[in-house]
Length: 93
Image (cartoon, rainbow, N blue to C red):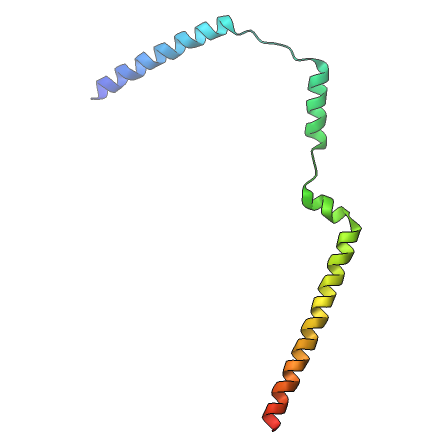
């Protein structure tokens, strides 16, 4: 069984080598235009900002988020005080 695997591997390597030789004769390297290379390099260097970074840069959204968090904290404090007062009255009654 081991010899069959070796023969199969050798035959595959021979096919791959012949295919590589044929392709190396057919395919020629090309030189891209300088404008294309410059454009790709510029896009790689600058990159695009994530959507979250764009939202954080918007100070209106940050102000609304802070106001919402403060409002939520005040609401929770009021609800807590109401519950404490209701539960406290039931204990004393």
